[in-house]
Image (cartoon, rainbow, N blue to C red; front, side):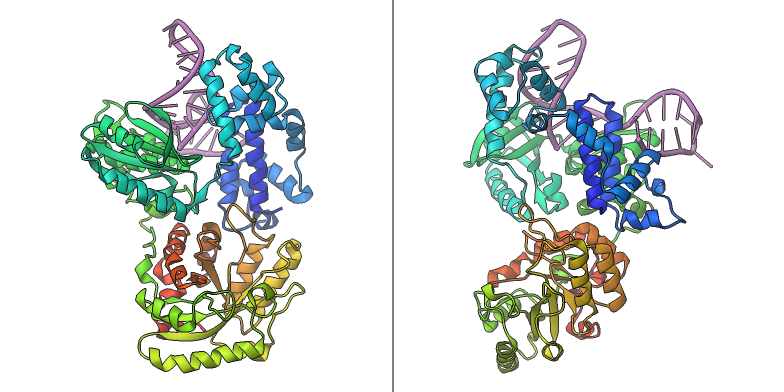
Length: 572
DNA sequence: GCCGTTTTCGGCCCGACTGTTTTCAGTCG
């Protein structure tokens, strides 16, 4: 069982314990333990195997969780979890996922009304029996009915890129409100998470009601979920929630800090403040003794008040940022203009929509200095993958085109070569040897066992012609889980052989994720951020990859394709 | 359940909003 599997067990345990009315702090301890393991940049199995180290040295892991982790590693299951699963009906969990209902209300509903399915719940709301329950009422019953239909529409997190489009659209709409003096997006969108659950807008307005009215007039608004003096929540489209909070100008920084999160980051900042006799809320930083305000207007002030430098939003997950901030070692994160090359793109030779020339021109327009043409290899039949003959034909075309781009753009003869199901590469070594740039990637046999798929990828890493592993885990956000690959072993092998790892910037992939990126950085593995463009416009996804790289704490130095072509060549 | 230059017990971030209450519990972020 790997880190994320163990973390998932503790998360489920925490969720189930809530239904038992357990001590909330015990529940939180399980959640924090899960987070500690999920955020780890090495495998817990490794720590357990090392006689010089103890799991309980990890912050958030005590004796109990360490023991349970060992049981999970040895047996793959936890008796306590099996028992709880038996005690808590599945429907209770489904009920608690409905907005506005939590563990307590779900338990009451399930017990008092013997709800066996969401359909039962709908009927109980309609026939009035829910409204009669103590602590419930007609409004609650109505909101459950609303919630049920939202749940049916499968409100899932949206890609960061889609959140970005929506934020820009709403932002433009809000520009039309004269009352707004200041406006900024917060939340997971600002932190650049790969997916976004909702959007949080923060404003300073002369007239708060006017600002809220204006948000309600957004054409795509389908519903207002709630509206108070300082906060309004609306639904956009079918199910997506947008929150807006109104604050005073002298609170803007603390409000922005607070609403940007993450929750774990905020809990930590508040604890640090408390140790210093201060209290942080969205309204500012205050002395606990006399309630006097010491900061609040800017985020810089808020962090400075507790003795820390400003922390970039992408790092605010309570992973390494506090330790680095205390030591003054926060990384200078990479920015989009740092990128000089793009080393993964397709053309009309396989499943791309543009020619070599068109891709090259588009790359120049975007300020790039070098690109690699990396079409699919023969195994990818659906995309008309290239066999040696067609590949060499394409390289001949590149030779013909190159003189036109002399001094403007270097075009590499590349290939995205498949790693075969049986192991080994889809093209013979002598062909790969002729390439300037070889990506290796898995497209078939994605559901193989951990051992098989890890062996395949490590085999590719050890091939001397392979320069970089593309989309190393194969995940598609919201759609397909990563391969069962042992990323520790893969990164170790890459570090040993000097093979680079791709951060695929496609907003549905963002593969590697930020945890793996941080681990790769630690091992000194050069990261290549690539667009995997299938048409000229596809080159624009680079900025999504940059967001992700920032979350992994990467600087320009960590990313190979920020180098000049001359410097980059030395890595090959 | 975790944690500790106010330690091995007694804390654990902090506030808005809603609906149901008449002082508060539950939920959310």
